[in-house]
Structures are given as C-alpha cells and as structure tokens.
Amino acid sequence: MSEPRAQTRSLWSRIRPQSIRGRVTLWAVVVIAVVLTLLSLASFILFREVVLVQLRDQADEEARHVVEHITTERYESSIPTNEPILRIQIVDRDTYEVLASSDALRGMPALTTKRPSADDFHLVTVDCGEAAGDEPTDCYQVVGYAIDDSAYGDVIVLVATQTPQVLAHHTLEMVLAGMSVALLAGTAVTAWYGVGRALRSVDRISDEIDRISVSGLHRRVPVPKNDDEIAHLARTANETLGRLEEAVARQRRFVSDASHELRNPIAGMITKLEVELSDPDPDLRARERLLAGLLSDTERLENIVQDLLEMARLDTGVVMNRGRVDLTALVEEEFRERRGHAQLLIHGSDPVYVQVNRLRLARVLTNLVANAERHAESRIDIIVGHTHGSAVVEVHDDGSGIPEKDRERIFERFARLPESRERDPGGSGLGLPISREIVHSFNGTLVAGHSDLLGGALFTLRLPEDPEPNT
Image 1 (cartoon, rainbow, N blue to C red):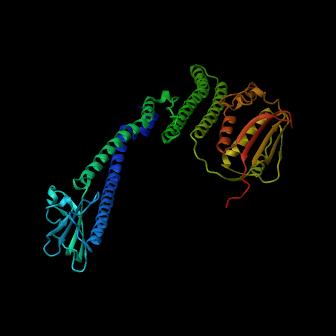
Image 2: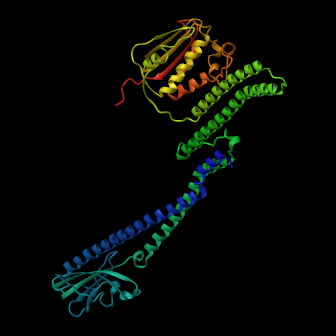
C-alpha cells in the first residue's frame, strides 16, 4: 500500500461506525436506565406518601366528627358514613368490645388491637387481616382517638381506610417498571437508528478514503450538508488530501525538472568525452580546450543541482531561522561596492526592518540585481522604502524590459525568454522562481513590471514590516 494511502487510511482506522453505533446505544441505554430507576423510585415513594397522607387526613377528620357526636349522644343505629370513609368503629377501651360500627363493619371484630400510648390519645397504624371479610392481604390505614366519659363511656373511635390496590398489590411498581422497560427499548431503538443515520456519512467518507491512492489523490471525501462535527471532519480530511496531493505533485515536478535540466548537459559531456577518447591521435591543445569546456559544463551542472536542492528545500517547507534585519543596511552592505558594466545606484536612508532569514533574503536580492545586470544598458537603481506597513525594495534597470504577457511566465521553473538565453546561455532559469518561493515563505510578494523611472524592467519585493524592535 502506498504511503499516502496508508496515512489516510490510518486516519480512519479508528473510526468504526458500527462500533461507535453500538457504544453510543449502550451508553444511552445505561444512562437512561439509571435515570429512570432513580426517577421511578422517587416517584413511587412520593406518590405512595402523598396518597397515604391524604387517606389518613380524611380518616382523621371523620374520627374527630364521630368524637364530637358521641361526646353528647349515642348513635341510634349504625354509624353513618360517607365516601370514601366506610369503616368506623367505637370500641371499649379496656375490652376492645365493639360498641357501635358502620354498616361495612357490622358484626366484625375490632379493626386493630393496638392502643394509643399512655401519654397520647391519638393512634395511627396500619393493620392487615380479615376484618370485614376482606382478604388477608388487605391492609388498612387506621386512625384512632381515645375519649373519656363519652356517651359510650371510655372508648376508642377507630376509622379505617383501605390501602389502594395500586399500592397494596404492587401495581404501581409494575406499571413504573413496565413504562421504564418500554422507554428503555424505545431509547435503544431510537439511539441505534439515530446514530446509524448520523454515521451514514462516515460510512461514505470511509469508503471514499479506501479508494484513494497515490494516483487518485485528486479525489475528495463527500462533505455532509449539515454543518456539524462530521462535516468539519470531512473538510479537514479534504484539506489533508489537498496537502498530500500538492506534496506529491511537488515531488513529481522536482524529479521532472531535475531530469529535464540535467539530461542535456550530461549527454553533451558524455558525447564530448566519447569523441575525444575515440580519437587515435589526440591533439593536446584540443584536449585542453575540451577539458576547459567540461569544467565549465561541470560548474553549470553544480549550479543547477544547487538550485534544484534549494527548490526542494523550499517545496518541503523547511523552517528557516529568522531574525530582525535592516533591509536598507543589507542592500548597502551587499551592493555598495558592487562593480559591473552598469552603474548601480542605491536610494534609501531610513532603516526598514523585516523578520527574515538574512542569507536567503540576500540571495533574493542578489538574484534580482544579477538579472538586472544581464539586461541593463547602463544603469540600475535600487530603491528601499516602506509603505502601508510593508517594506519595499524596487530594482529598476534601463534594459529592453519584460513583455507584459511574460511577466508571470518568468517565475516558472526553467522558463527563459529568448533575450535571457542570448545574454546568459549557461543560466538554469531557476533564479527568479527560487526568489519568489523564498519571498512567499516570508509572507511577501515578488512581481515584475515596467519601470517608469528607467524605462526597462522593474522587480518589486514587498515584505511585512517589523517596525518595533524585539524585546
């Protein structure tokens, strides 16, 4: 498997939609189960307490009414009742003999044998049994009041309310448990299909990643329409693929450039050597001229290789050490004493500071001045200044200039105009491309144009100015 494809697949090897789907569903069910258990338990306790308190309050109120009545008189027959209180008894405090009762408890024993404490006249209890012919499992909330000197003597008034079936037979617990199970099942189904639908785009992205190879780096993964994390992940993957494609393209371009530029000089040198070696009677002077020519070709090859290596370093984005450089002082230092067929004038007095690698910026300036010297007739002007937060260097010459249609083409690798080939046959055509790449690495620009000052070519270099000294 190719390296880029292995890299892209490794990015996605951890993303298994089915495993994510299962984990999310499991965690959703576990969390909902815990929440439902706590809520169900709290709801049951609260509901049960509210219902029982309400029943006891109703029984307590009815018991006080009976107490008020028997304080002065007896009931003529059974004790009258109203819904929902149907069970009332008046029992002797000592013997617990039933003295009076409601119709529902006629002929039945006392609801409870428990008595109020010695220092209290009020009784609240729960009794389960066969009172009133109910099932042994039926239970009652019993409220009692002890009263002295009533129409019946010293008695206890007992009022009972039956515990609702929903509480007595665990009906509420079963209902809550059934609702919880149904909700858990619904949560599991919803999470499973919901997460599956959300991760469907991840499946498509993974499938597309699997199809990408070195020969197919132009492919891109589909970006979901929703602006969510998966869409962000897809865009990030596409940006990574774009960088991989660009890196591979640069590698291929470098190999192509190197083979193209080195093939002809090497072939020419081999031909010259073969011809010389095949001569049975070599001429020493001709051999000396041949060696001088081979030395010149070798030096040209060396320059080409150095330029190619520099382009390779720039393509790989090697980080360069940077420092604060005075652009005006650098131009003065590099070109003040430079001598050539053309007069070189430098304009600039104030310091102009930039954050750059000094050696590489000096190479850019040297390339620009060397290019101007090849084409200038008699004069070159270098102007250093700053404007709108940018440091600017302009290199003017009084040559024939650059046709407008070729002002971008000269920055292409190995691109050389006819005049350039005529004036410098040994050039590689890499000086200006290298200069622009270096300037771009400093977040600057390098463009060619027409010089209104001298009438020839104009190269304008702009770099971000660094006006404040480093602290």
